[in-house]
Amino acid sequence: MHILTTTSASLDDLAGPVDLRQTPADIVALSFTDSDLAGLAAAWRADAGRLPSMRLAALRDLRHPMSVD
Image (cartoon, rainbow, N blue to C red; front, side):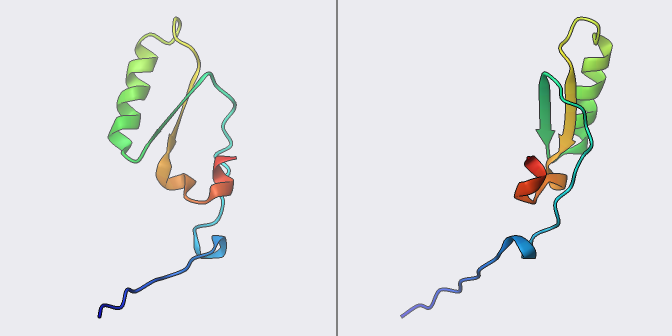
């Protein structure tokens, strides 16, 4: 017989909510990788006048469900 280890977690066990204090935009790009975000930012800046507004956010900062709101 095998006994499975289980754990339970609550919102209190997670990282606290974070407000990124960003203004709304047409597009929001999310990534775990800083190099992805840096590449997107550089590509957007190259032609920013013709592109919709964009915000970037690191997913590691959005671990708490209330951070997404």
